[in-house]
Image (cartoon, rainbow, N blue to C red):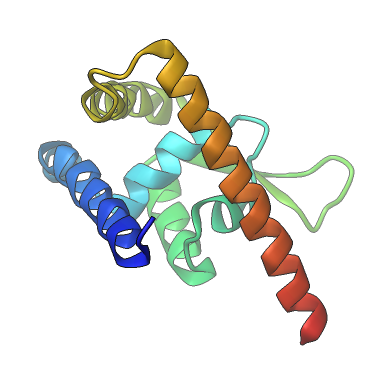
Length: 149
């Protein structure tokens, strides 16, 4: 696959995905990072630290921290000290955050339905396997790069 073409595909999806949330972002007075965080917490309840969000979503620490504080002040999330390690703050969706995340999830599902329209279950599974292989290659390359530092 041509490198530029792959990057173009990724950029097109990101544009489509972000635009799909435009009316909800306006209605809730959200930035896209707020939406990313709420959906991440809804979709990955076991990954509930700021570090998990930063690592998994590729967002900056300061942006995540600022967005979490905004969401906390609005009653969408709460932060609680980890029972085993006081240095870790666990993030939990509050009832308002859960209901908002459920609304956002409908848009997310719609996005993926549109993106995968016309693909058979077999094609989707193959795509999933290929993306997992790509991810494994990237993780391995990142580890190699870290060792060279």
